[in-house]
Length: 349
Image (cartoon, rainbow, N blue to C red):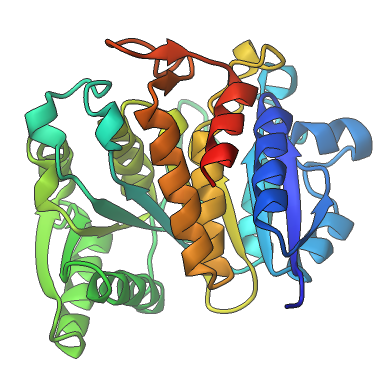
């Protein structure tokens, strides 16, 4: 079997620590050629830009890209001419043509008590948030004029169609239900969104479609999360709702993600940030990164059995009562650091 070419981008803050955990998992599974490169603040320090052309080209030539975290107070600035670490991530998404962000939310049985919601409310939750990545308010025209400012939200039918198809196809492999989230009672872009998704639905006869306004969806996520299978929504709403959904698992440190395009390598990353306040302390939770590796195996490389093995190993480590500080607490649990949690996962593999 030819080794899969993986570009590992540790980035900033806790990134190098959780990146080391990912490398150990890949080496344990075997069959990978791993190239480690700079992005974000680390790249700014070394090259004056958050993403160099050489790194982007290396990512384009890979089979999959694993990104750990970018950002930190060292590089915070309001000067529009100064580079920011987040530009590396945005540039990577654009350069690889990534438009669909997938975030699965499935609380581990061992962590049901760690969620801020009651166990009986979240037990059985298994949903997938499909977020559009390249349109909407994040990429519209923006500016300031004296005491006023504007950020424009724009979508095309083509952009909506391609993300909707990802949602319908994903639901067809799951439980067959798509919930499209918009603000069609107020926003013209949302009315176009709803019309387009509704028009496509008959092409996927085995999938049920319903619609929710985003404020109602936010409420339903915490009041009755088990009703959802696949949630599809635009960029801003998806950013907010997927972070809200993450807390069903008890911690952002548990949530992986995949960003996919129509062709070429996908980008896989934990949802959490760089956590500079705990960088270098050995306390970071590596599980979202390891679960991102599992998503890379499944969605990027077609190694479904290895993805299952890794996900089961994460569940096994948690079932042993091991908890990083962000998950700590509860009876019959023991607080551990990054390395010991990684050891337990690898032993289970």
